[in-house]
Image (cartoon, rainbow, N blue to C red):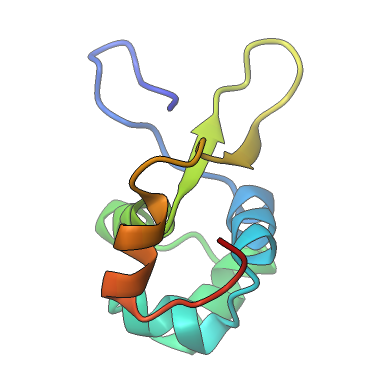
Length: 102
């Protein structure tokens, strides 16, 4: 999980958001339901058309992390995403109504 110098989570990029949805096999509608962010706002963010408020990006990030995605810091190789190691992921996904690959 990437952090700012103060220790708070930093924003995710549009590319990371798209990749995270892809790893979960989520549609924008599913992300909207999990995050409370309108589908159109997500689409505009992912396309780079607009930069949403920090609270909006945080809601998207939190929903994706709750579903099992980890965001990887820039650290010289570029920002990325991956699925968290199995452990409590399936339980969290069921709570969110996601029944993808477990």
